[in-house]
Image (cartoon, rainbow, N blue to C red; front, side, top):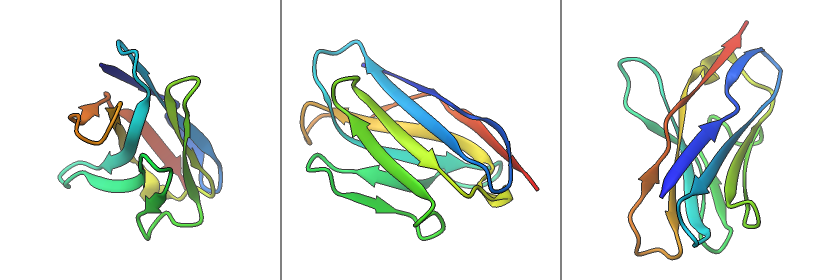
Length: 117
């Protein structure tokens, strides 16, 4: 299973970006997925997650601004990021399980998000 993350870039504060995480190399759908972010010298932190049943949870710092969603037809998970702040600047990583909850987590490569003030 390969996860391809994309959609990062440079945006001004208050702007929006949508990150995508597309699964390939499998006939199974994404079951659950998460987005993490990491800045230099800091541990990776969970930003948003979506469960197999579709429930979502978010870090307090992004609640009300970010939305995680899943498109089963495209086998892709999205992270819609609105009202971006400079402190959202980080490398964003996606992770996903396919088929069911008892499969391992697969990770995508990071995508850089830079928010200018």
